[in-house]
Length: 160
Image (cartoon, rainbow, N blue to C red; front, side):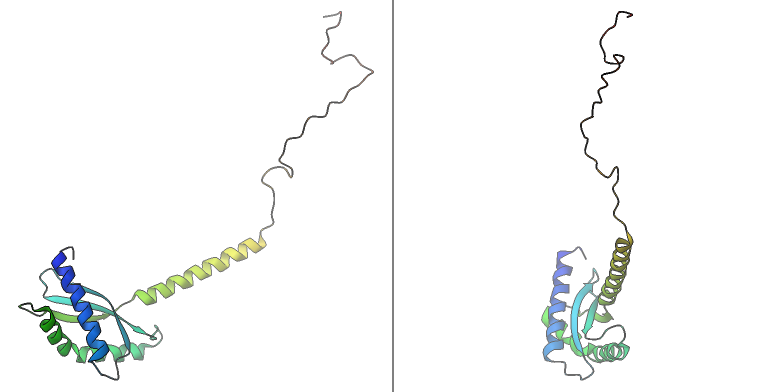
């Protein structure tokens, strides 16, 4: 969909379908539908409309199925309005697909939460230890002086 004309058509279809779903389609099976994306083929003959249903999680399959049925039954009215608003010679066929993005995002959040819990558990078991010595700073050497022996003091003797 790199063609600017196709992008404009897709954006216009998205706006028209969203307005129609909000204002004119009065099907009780229709949930709170959000049009997330529209993809149009290069010849503008087919439009795939991705949607999400607010409040219908992956567990609520009945709400998703009823919304899909409502969109299928309203497809003709939506296509007629899209054709009227676009003003093109041919009207694209509409295909509705439930967007998997919210479900994927929820699964990703669960994986990240599990990873954070495991990291916290490992951090709680960790005992802090020093990488080197307990006191890594160098201290001045202590010089021990012996008054009894003259050997090893660095002064030359007569034998040298």
